[in-house]
Image (cartoon, rainbow, N blue to C red; front, side, top):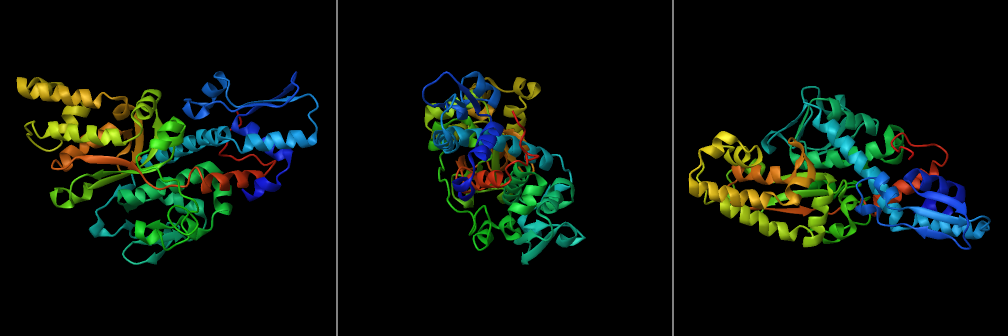
Length: 399
C-alpha cells in the first residue's frame, strides 16, 4: 500500500472512521485496539453491537503513539473485514443491476464469445482486440463500458458474465469517477479466460498481482462469512465431459453475493466446500434412482416443491425425494447466494438441482477461483481512498 506508507494520521483516521472504526479518547493509560471478529457478523451494525472495531486512545497519547496506533488499526484484519462489508454491498448492487437488465442475454459459444448487437462493440463503449468476440476492452470511459451490461443489449456466456460482475463490483465500490480514473482500460479487459492472461487484466492478467488461492474455501470459511463476499467461483461437472448432455451447461460461473449465518457456520464446521462435493454426489446418486418424466423435473420437484408432482410420487420415489430433501436442507444449499448470468442471484442449491436436469449423468463440484479481492485489489482500494483523503467516495456510506 504505497499511499498508506506516506498517508497522514488524519487521513488514516478519516478512512478508519468511514469503514466503521469507533475511535475514542478517554480514561486509558495506553492505546487499546480491539478489532474483534467483524468477518463473522452479518453487518457493520452487528459488528458494533458485538464490540468489534473499537480503538481507545489516551487523552494525550503523543503524535508518534497516535500515528503508530492508527497505522496498526489500518493494517489489522479488522480493517480488511470492514472493507469486505463495503465490497459485499458493492457486489450485491452490481448483481442486481446486471440481473435487472433484460437486454443482457445468454448465448452459446457458437454465436461468438461476446455479442454487442447490430451496432457493434464501439457503439456500446467497447473496442475489440481479439477476433470472434474473444477479447474486448473499454473504448471510452470505464463506467460507460459497464453501462452496456447494465442497460444495453449484449450477449455472453456465464464466464464473461462472471468477469463483468467482478468488474461491476469494482465500479460500485469506487463510484463512477473513481472507477474511471483508477483503472487503465486494458485492466478491465473481458473475453475468454485464456485471453485475459495475455492482457493487463486486474482479474487474471499482468496487473492482477497477488492471488488468494482457496479453491475449496477452507481458509475463507475459517475467516467468516464476509470473507466470501464478491469471490468468484464455478460449479463444475465432476465426471468427464463425454457424459454431458447439455454442453452449454457444463459449468456455471458465479460471484458470491451473500452468505447467511447458518451457511457460514456449516461451511466453517465442515472445513469449506470439499464436504459438499460429497453431498452433491450423494444428491446426484439419489437422482439416478428416481424416475424422470421430462425436462426440469428436478427443479420443479426439489426447488419449487411442486405439490401436485410430489403427491403423484410412488411410495418408493417419495422416500428417495425425502432423502434428497434432507441433503438440500443443509444451510449451505439455502443460505449461500451467488450471482450467475443469466440465472441471477439464487441459493447454490437452486443451481445444483437445475444441473441435475441439464446434465443428469454427472454430479457437480463447487469451488472458488483465484482472486485478488483480499490482496491486490484491497490494497489498491485503500491507496485510492487515502490519495483522495477529504473527498468521500459516492460508493462508501459513512456509518
